[in-house]
Structure formats: structure tokens, C-alpha cells
Image 1 (tube, helix red, strand yellow):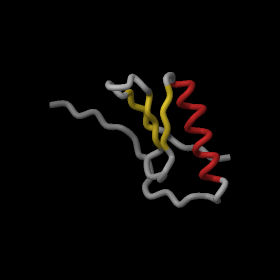
Image 2: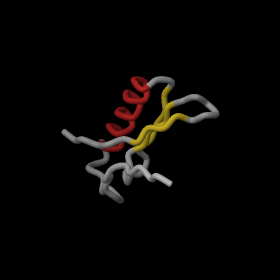
Image 3: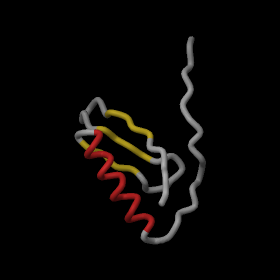
Image 4: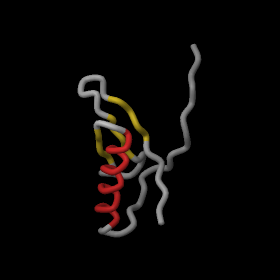
Length: 68
């Protein structure tokens, strides 16, 4: 079993949720709802993992709020 952290944004032009796994090439998808995005990104990750465990290019650390 693998656990990945996805970054989710909402595109203002399409109103779609867009998600990606930081440092994981090709692990990105979109959906009209968070639930659809979750299903889609899981499917993408499963397809990528069929070729073996990928070597992540970076490690997700977290988010940071900048106050100016």
C-alpha cells in the first residue's frame, strides 16, 4: 500500500479541480468534483505503478502561509 499527498487547486477558467502529486512525474488529473478528482488521480497512479515503484523527484513537505 502506498500513501501520497496530492495538491488540489481549482482552475478559474474551467471550474475543474486539478490535482497532482508533487515530485511524482505524470501523477496529475482533474475532475468536476473532489470525489471525481480523487477517483481519477487514483486511476492515474495505479497505471503508473504498473510499471514499478517510481522514484520520486522530490518530497512533499507541507504548505506555508506568508503574511505581508
